[in-house]
Image (cartoon, rainbow, N blue to C red; front, top):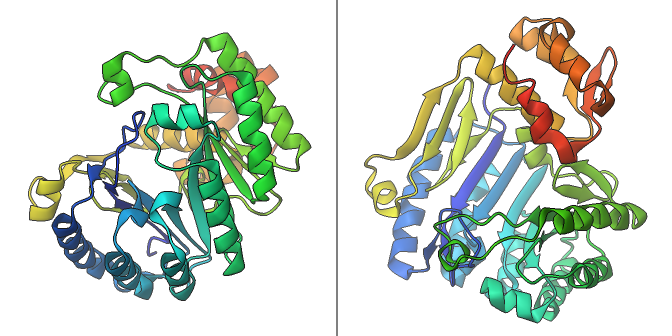
Length: 361
């Protein structure tokens, strides 16, 4: 069976956010052109795949100039004709009406916009180059063209952020009337600007208070907390990301992209030169044994509101779920809603702690 889900990493940014640890480089016109040539070569290997979801992430795909942005969408277009969901990540300062028109022309039907915060001081601290008003204008422009499946990214536990800052940002997100919101707590990685400057995320108690406020506020405003960091209006979950969480196979292309096909897990090099020159192209390329696959499947499923499909899991790995994980299930019984069909983690705030007990069977 052909893989139904495609992720393409576009690693270019006009400027680098101070918290970002994803594979990224500052935009360079010549390098982007070479990247697009290489991407087209890679995609040609999958000419007969019929994808259900496509996701263009980054980096900032919209950082490409208009001609390059059009070429990117043209390259992907032959593979997008039968997709249910076609998502692209955007930053408002790199978008204009012409680019919005191209999204509509080439069948993009879902966008993810990086707001992160509505507080101007926090945006400057993160080295974000937009304002809330810029996001508001972009959302309006997308909706005018009939693209209304819009997701907004928000960060919390930022240095110097207060609960009032977070409340203000969430209120402004509600004003945008979008279908999906992703909330991420800051993790400071050592090779980011934040890491090099010694910035820290907030105290764990404050972060927990923020998490609880987010949960309560978005639930009251009609959002379903369907995955650890993701909330959506009814029927507007991310189909592409749900493929990850249901442990489906997916193809990853581009520097820094990862993929999973069968028991093979791979990650392309984060070195742009190596990727463009087709040398040492994988940072990781491994085969998982059946125990590793089973744990990854369980781990991803527990992140979601639908939990683990027990029958599917047992057929796939030829094990009896309740027998094999009896000790872990009993130890965490108060955090699990389990029946004949599914096992759902009801306290995903403690998910990492719970998963430790399921690591070995």
